[in-house]
Length: 274
Ligand code: ADP
Image (cartoon, rainbow, N blue to C red; front, side, top):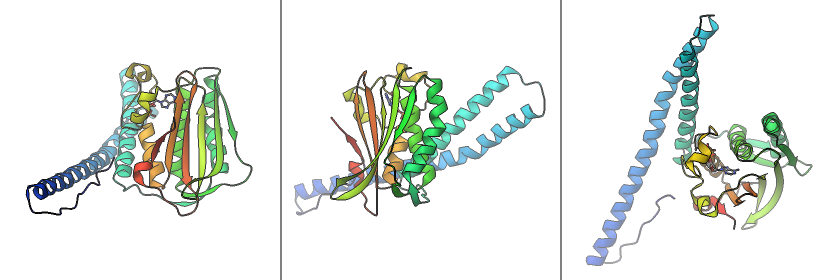
């Protein structure tokens, strides 16, 4: 979590000095942490331009009708992979630093999720999965950046598809709930009947590059950033994500977005439901 510790100094004796030193160290740690976030944001920003130039040049060459050697196709694939990774790291570092630009407008989640589910339907069905949307039949409107919210649900749905074997079901549910201190939230659950996640892994799930059992996840083609991005994007909207899972039975991720102007404390942004 974020470092927000500072202890009031009440005496000038040895004890007071220890507290002062502790506070200085906390401050320095926080400064170093902020500098790290800025550095990642700056580096990834600088990497984006040369990468898109490389991608463009490779595509122009292919379109010009030249014979394209297989090595070149391989380079093209890797350049695309690297661009996606750099883009993900860039938005993630901005969101972590609380500097993610959000273009918030009233967004009807019911209609928005219909479109998103439609977009991933083909991929789900290709993998032998049934995907369905259970929504309340009226608009559920939140103030949100549609593009960021799309990425949150695409990340969750892509995972549900990746980690559920053929024959399984993915269900998306929307409801309105009073969650905390009488605040009304739009709650969207992505429920899969997949491989599930062991309880001891749940806490690390939202960490950068974290993957449950490297070997299990490696061949699925993700970057390990999907859930961190989802978490930080939802948090930037004043919301939080809940997860509950049962190995071999399935996983439920619930995205809770405030309806109205409520916000929630940063350190409650992830909740593990036992
Ligand atoms: P990745 O790019 O590896 O999918 P994510 O951050 O999206 O990275 O997810 C982190 C890890 O969490 C995954 O590697 C996978 O082990 C696990 N995971 C995420 N979603 C699910 C799910 N729906 N079912 C089972 N495991 C999941």
